[in-house]
Length: 234
Length: 234
Image 1 (cartoon, each protein chain N blue to C red):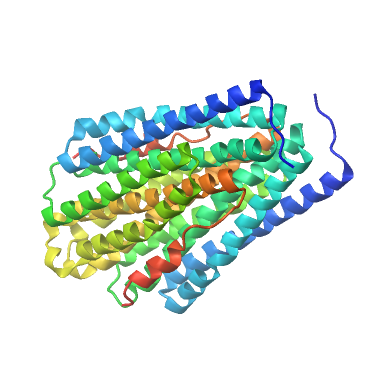
Image 2 (tube, rainbow over the protein chains, first blue to last red; image 1 turned 30 degrees about the vertical axis):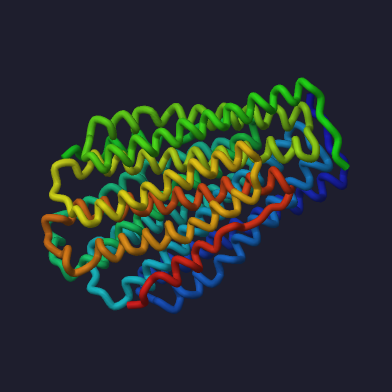
């Protein structure tokens, strides 16, 4: 039984969703700047990403507070209920993505000055491109409440996982065994893992877009199984 | 303005919280089994952890559905509202902890048969003990609605981060530079990172315990800054 919430609620909901989009844009920007800093070996740019992270945490706390306030006082129903819940849940995923941006920035600071492996850095750059597109698409799907687009985005996570496994293989392969690259290899593994994790959180955001639109709670990824398939048994 | 929800709601809330505790126990068990399999180099036990993960995902979906159902239909207020919200939010953290247990199990499968480094495995065993205690304490604090205990638990995350940084240093140190340990070192780094991430999720659960009890949304960790402090600039 669907019924409309009043104009005051609608106006607050609009503000809440617009704040969520602002947070999405901030997170997207942090990912852009942290991956660029990593590719450019730019320690100063990486430090700026670390320093900006508190903004994202404040965004999340702010969204949580407002969403809980609306839930508690206005008790929205049907679509309105789902829209507030989606913000409440998906904001945690955005916050985690922001943490991973900081993780990538930290690696940039950590390995500055160490010898690098160009071939693996190219692989990471490709994974980075895929993740940035995926995040942008998922925010668009959320904004347009496009459940079908959200489902499609979740499917691209399979390609992300494949790229992660390929980077891992390259890092541990015999051809890069020389000791001078130990620090770089550890960082490549960490950065690839951060990017792969960002993919998982984007899938979660897509799941909340589907819930908001349709009311159905679905599991869009079968991540663990898939990763297992890619790993050789030794 | 606090007012009591009816007996039907109270009974459903009790069921919801008991399901949350069941999920906590299942996740705790997965962590125990995956870290033990890693320490014992036991591939079969690790595979059992991977296969059991779907239970945790089902737990989470089940809890989400029930929490949202209760929110939507019974519109709880005050403490009851916060208790349902806490389950809704903290169940995502439990699910992520379960994912990390699978990650650790996957590493066990992945490096089986490769040469190991005893000293680093001991460090990982210590970190494992600390994490298992932290998880157990946080579930107890949740169960007893003990906000003070929850705050104390969050503080132990500092020690977890310190141990993670020490393992990372050991992995990349010159004394372990020989090429035959490349696969093991990659796995040590991954496992240590999974454990460190579990610590972050335990802090989140503690934050929701505090919210449930006090109504205050607080940030109990200053994780990124702390990690930064521990990392040498190179």
